[in-house]
Length: 155
Image (tube, rainbow, N blue to C red; front, side, top):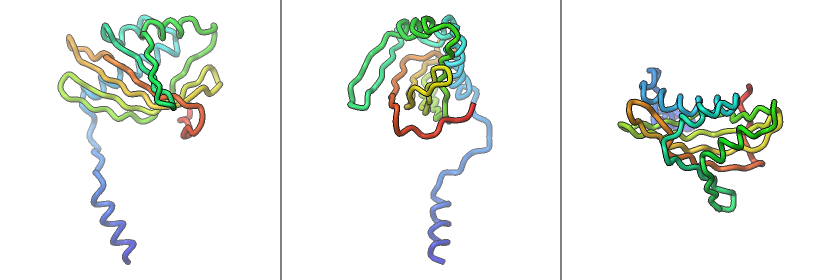
């Protein structure tokens, strides 16, 4: 009986998931992220560049805490320069999207594949701004690891 009472108390303390649709800004902010990675898979560098605001930044935080800054154009260039026929596929988990006015954040787990070969996993943290009625990425920070990854979603 104590177990049932404890479980009932725990269930009442958990937040209730809403069955309503997300806001248009929530969906539009996340759509920029999915468009970015769709562009990466198809090597559409124009679509990839369009996802970023001028002066956007890209950082990676290593397992040892070392921070690496990469230029957006360098990353896009590496996608364009990958071997012909090799699909670069960043598979995304369930995102956590927060929107307040013209600012949004997206936190999402990912698994990166080069063709059929697993490369690494981690988390992406995006900051986006809505300017001129359009969401664009201001910054991306990610973690990268090769071991200890949760199972990737099926394709």
